Amino acid sequence: MLFHSSIRKELARSFGATLVVLATVVMTMTLIRTVGQASRGLYNPTDVMIVMGYTVLADMPTILSMSLFIAILSVLTRMYKDSEMVIWFGSGHGLASLLKPLFRFAWPILVAILALAFFILPWSFGRIEDLRDRYEKRGDIARIEPGQFQESASGDRVFFIEKNSENKQVGNNVFIATTELGKETITSARSGRIEVIGPDKFLILENGQRLERTTGKSELTVSEFTRYGARVGADDMSERSYVPSNSLTTLELIKNPTAKHLAELSWRLGLGLAAFNFIVIGLAAAGTNPRVGRSANLGFAFLIFVVYFNFLLLGKSWVESAQVQFTPFMVALHGGALSLGLLWLTKRNNNWTLRLRRRSLLPPAQEKP
Image (cartoon, rainbow, N blue to C red):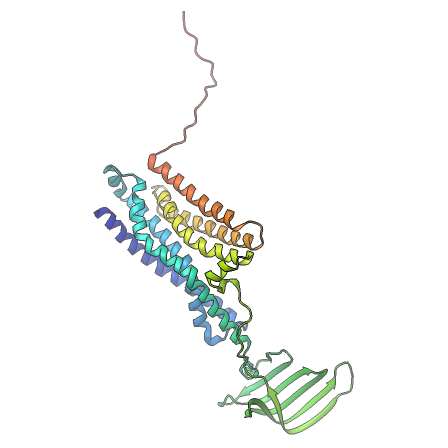
């Protein structure tokens, strides 16, 4: 039908524009947050853009759901404002008959949301955890930054280099504080360089001194040296031991249905069910009021979206803490939202109104004889 085709084309334009705007906003906010995390040492500063890309990719189901909801609500509100819905109703069709063109437009988006939630989301979080774990396990040399105190991977050594030359393997004014085997040592030197001796890396210090004392004792040993070598830790290439639930595949969550895994599964499945419900709610909520304008509907849509997704997050924490069970929560939240949306749509489709019968407080009039 021509009318259905025009609705789908307008929905596609509105959805595309909304998606670009929301994705840009999310990318900007994610970039700012990731830069802050990198400055605190959670990620390698060179991996900021990669972490941002993975994070935005994991947020795409939410972005697609909100873009679809806003597109449906804005297009239908515009049709009400321009009296196109009056023509549609005048042709003998009701509001519920628009569900068919809406779902014909939205089904590829719903499939994409489910695919992203079930497959891409855990993959993205897994890559982010790999980058974080790799940065935490970097060797002592990789941790050294000129002008900053840096702790070794094992936590028993602190390095400081005032500055390094053009060659990153050479530095000036080196300071090392070490605590191991019941001894505390402080080593300082005018210069130092990295040398590979056999399978190990050594920091070769020149023209410095070394202070050593046993923990709990006051005796202090001071020695000066012309050349001194200190073994430095290499990069830890072991696999990541910690596997958070959001980086597990959906099949692994189903095979091991613990409370934490069911909570993560409720979030992924809830993303697809919420997007489905938003189509019905968007159709039921569409309309126009000349007194408040179109911005009121968009504000209302944003409020519904925030409330719905806050319940998703709350439900995830409730299922994880075993306060509620997985199946009752999914039925109550998503089934309840769908029931309310269908009831609201039925009311508007059939023009149901709530009428209260008034009782007269005056006594009935008496008939004249």
